[in-house]
Length: 566
Ligand code: ATP
Ligand code: MG
Image 1: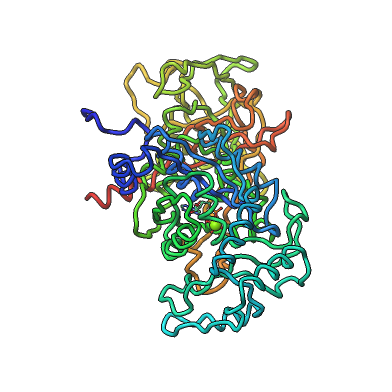
Image 2 (image 1 turned 120 degrees about the horizontal axis):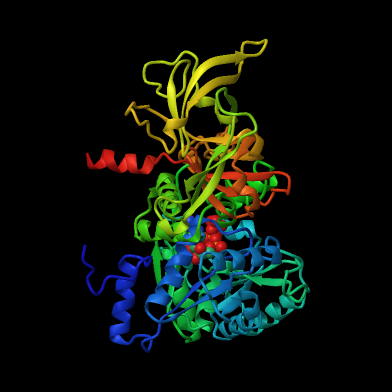
């Protein structure tokens, strides 16, 4: 394949309509040839894979066009925001591979400026204090088919509005008793223009400004002006803000300040999960998961703990691209991206998840051989390691059947199979306990088959992984399945929590892993041969490693694509 010159660098997002718009603005010199984007999370929860899309997009555009990208905490709601979330957001953006340099900003730092601008609008007769209750404001607002009604307070004089707004700020009125509203048009077709609320009275301690304020700006009043203050050129947001754009335009035009260009794109939705922070908070607070970083969560922290790499997430974001049309992405694509990355990079190890004891009767007692194993067939530079082999081994319980059906080619009484990197073994006897459970297999090995082939050319149909019993380390392995049993829990008629998958977590306590894993650290990732990709969990202790299954080896996405192509 040849690469054309204007193809973006590897890992960059393929071209899309937003890039086209920016190129056009650069050509016409609209913003003096500058590109300044921002990622503006509200610190009221952890970031999720949908945010990753926005992060890759905003930071990616800045990188590609030689601009810069700000990280801004959109922190205008004191009740739900916290420093814990700010820290988690910063950690996650950094981990994803993006750098905001010294350009981390807080909307709460703009409170004074926003207040002054509000006073300016009042002076221009473009904002007024309203005494209607929130409920009345809602009723007066009208509907899509009916115009709204003007509040009796709408005709207040500038002087009275200035006085009342100052007293709102000074804390003279109870919470919720008054608001400041923009004076636009109660009959506007766009409901966002029907005199939207700019300030509400709320006695709540803000995690940064403390009790300095008892009035807080609404998102609609804060957001566009924050972008303007920072000199953002391209203010990229999700589609639901398309209808707010005329309002943001109105505010900026009234103030006569720098006016970014807002561009909307479709938010990411993913099958078998939920993405709204409200719902994710509900899962955490209700104890349905073990925390924001539970490996079943679609949060960046959860994905990281699960074993996802930043590269896999960035690749996913590049592949889904950006569009104007909403759609739901199959989670199998995300899994495919991880598999693709780990297949290239993760070292292989042998681990037996559900051990069955095997005694090789003709192998000398007390003898140990160190057999050579390849660390990564995709990467010769990963080298080899030595794996001990001895008379007593563990194999996977599923790899044996006493009474095998036709298509089962693995171990069975009288049958011969290959042990990876070792010998052919043949099952000669089955040992059972009092309940008839198979507890041990007696086998023989053929010394001439070392390395995996028989000199006489006889074939076996299966290769099994194994570990040497006296050398094995015990481990706990956590197998994860989808968090929800419903492909789109958001669309369910009843509570989304009714669709949690009761089998989303299976804990295996008696796994046996090869001794070379002894030094593995939390966050290290491996392919356990034949069972999947795994990541060491921070719950690991010196005596017992804990692994999370990041993803299985079977690739349902590849299957989906094949089916679509065929
Ligand atoms: P939520 O509905 O989960 O609370 P939000 O949009 O309120 O999401 P913010 O913290 O305000 O959360 O989001 C920060 C940025 O991330 C915004 O610019 C928003 O457009 C973007 N974003 C949020 N969710 C998604 C998503 N699913 N796909 C793409 N971008 C998203
Ligand atoms: Mg938001």
